[in-house]
Amino acid sequence: MRVLVIAAHPDDEVLGVGGTLAVHALKGDTIFPVIVADGNPVRYNEERHKELQEACRRCCATLG
Image (cartoon, rainbow, N blue to C red):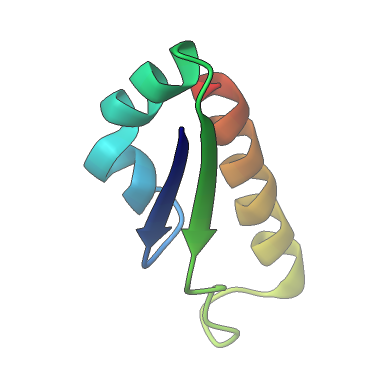
């Protein structure tokens, strides 16, 4: 099965449906997370933006 998750901000996918995503990952399903906000450039500088992207990748790896 293929699962598409659309979230407004990084971590919303985990806080909202993280347990469900973990179950799908254990079943071998393919999960496609889509984060529609990329971080407000006024709020986050380029370095912080990259840190947030990496944190999102690590979270996805942890969930499978």
